[in-house]
Amino acid sequence: MKLILALGLCAALTLTACGEHGEPTGSVCPPTQTLTYVNFGKSFMDTYCVDCHSSTKTGAARHGAPAFHDYDTVEGVRQTIEHIDEQAAAGPNAVNTIMPEDAPKPTEAERRQLGEWLACGAP
Image 1 (tube, rainbow, N blue to C red):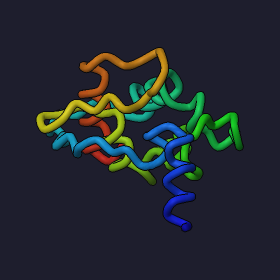
Image 2: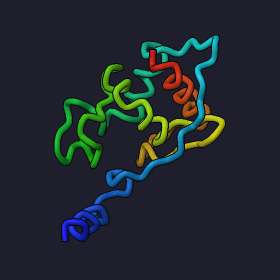
Image 3: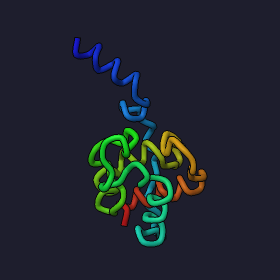
Image 4: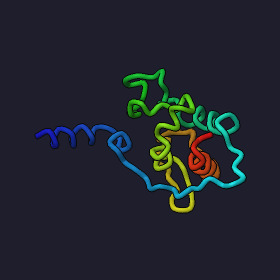
């Protein structure tokens, strides 16, 4: 019975909120990586993610974003690097476009930068 209720709830929510996952991108940290939170990550997250994934948002204002998936700080990003990679980044093995669900959406080039930045540990 619990499984049926969970499946019903899942159907009522977006697939992403119920755990839809992309593939690991296979991105690697290039030896000449220059992307940092200051010159890339903060702007990317502010533009594409924090409307839902913010520590200041609760309840319906999160639009289904999981709790503790907050990207308004670099520490928050670092806690879920693999999840972000599988939802929004691009690399040699996958181009994940699950997130963001709504516009604006990053270009594939931006998603590839995201993959590399995450592969470096989100410095």
